[in-house]
Length: 312
Image (cartoon, rainbow, N blue to C red; front, side):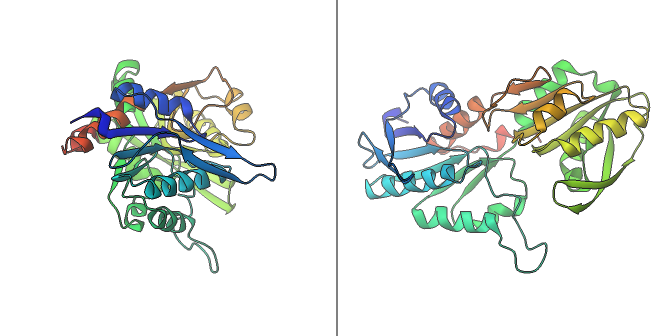
């Protein structure tokens, strides 16, 4: 494999992560300019040739929606510049929570995003911890779905006493994920059962499972306003837990999230850098996924399996 056949570009959403991935892979990030006009409109242009090359565009699509549209413009520019393959590296896939019709007359946002990326010219997608696994099927191109467990598992084994650990899901939807960790680490499992009246507002919660005297580690894919996580931590302690920590792949951390976490009973919150951390918080530890993405790019370019990159 020749590195000169691979070019890695970054939009404005997360330059730091893109630079880490490029460095880990062994290339310099390519130069792309996103020009903004006075009315807010913008356009993307590559300042170097991409003809006949594999172009990796690194851009998480968290809000604002400009991040998504910037990615679409870069894809279109690469296609019109005769790139050989256009791979969208989307560490955090925005709109993933809109994966089905949960009531009449609503949009399925994640399917719409998949359609737009495919129409723009994406030939492959690399992403991490989709909120719903079925989103992979929304694409008509290959999707490499990575898991944060690859970076979380070594951290757990090095920093926690697994003999007294209980893995927990903050809701019934996260049971499969937490159970996979519990099986791999040979620990018990607990589940928080919650009821909501409206989105982002919890009506009540209860714990299923024994956490008495245990160190509880709550596993989730997204932490947004942190309301569920902080209430789950309180509930675990009320049920006799010795300590409560949390691990979430995507630190969206919107609204009052940072304040809630700072004043919560969580011992620590471990997240990845799929989304840049906008505010420092003593309880939050960030693990980088740059090496994992770089290794997957290497495997794709050398036509090797990526299954060895998955711990669970």
